[in-house]
Length: 550
Image (cartoon, rainbow, N blue to C red; front, side, top):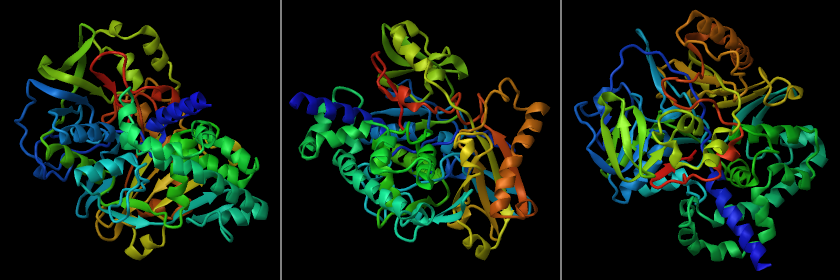
């Protein structure tokens, strides 16, 4: 029995490393702006990104010859890694290919003559647990990092978002599954009782997730040391219950009596898909054990970061630079140098300069870009099965995007929800094309994103756009532009269900499709079948870490 309990705990610790409180990032297209400038971050007071040069120190600084750790890529994962390493005294350099930090979360601005600037998010827009005005949870790794760095992200809390489903329009609240809520209205007393059983079944699983702070979890043997202080608390929990954490969430739904088909099943499939890219039968329970509380606890709130997702990026940039870490933009890495089976540094594209890494190189590239390209100069250092397994990781579909700046009074914006989830027909499948759409209207809560009398929104299809029709198209070609306009029409139609006259209100609109080689993401295609790539963030070679932070 002891052996089984130990094996259960080992598996749970391993899966929690990748599963709990991830940030679901959306792969984005390259926004078109006027002049392009490049800057390096060397100031703890940096508060703006990309071309907002007034807040960024000069461009003459260049990387030193060596650092303890080199981080390739400045997405939220890379910046979190760099910030914590610099906090603990390591010399760190982040090497970012583009002119703005943040990866898919960088955000961008469009200036409309005689009106002003419109700020858009390209990636994640749905957050919880970031607001420093509320107690933090140990199961939220990003909040843990921000708290350690003493870099709070200013947020506006809110509790509702909109649902536009075939059954009708709903306002989602923490009471969604209570008497008088949507579950009660659509699935009746039987559905309500099943929901109550689900919440009860999730309680011990949520307790198991909370028992092990994600900051204590690692991807190597040192997990034994960092997790040890918390094992006493974890061991008091039922090991058989804990083992459910690594099983599909659908198992919990089945045991709770959630009917298929039903409104409740459809909703939870959609929620899982939005969080993990997979429906309930492909999403592990550990993730939902944490996230269900974020939606349905009595005091559950969502967070709207002021300034958009770049507010998070800016906080991580400040947290990195104030402890001596450095961030170099427009510094494309052509090669990760492997010497005698050990990662020793990187070679930059500009001038072919080599920067040495004394302790490690952390890669934020996708598994496909890392192992299917020439960026690693000596792949023989990796076991062939290791490479084969990761390159064969299934990839899913991509995203259509539509960013709109539109006329709206403050009173009109306050009548809207900050987020909407739309489904045309459950029978098409949540992952069916031209079916699901997510809409973010951050101007509902954040007045800084657009001039007075205007708002911004971002509509996108959540990894349901077939990549095949786009493959091989040049981004600047007329074919690409025509297809982009054609494929964005569905997004416009969905927006008209929220704002019927949105086309007349719009003064800025920009459609896009994420395409390989896009300006802000070096990823190839959105990874839907995520579990294969999360088996181990530590590559089987000295000094190389594959950063799988989400």
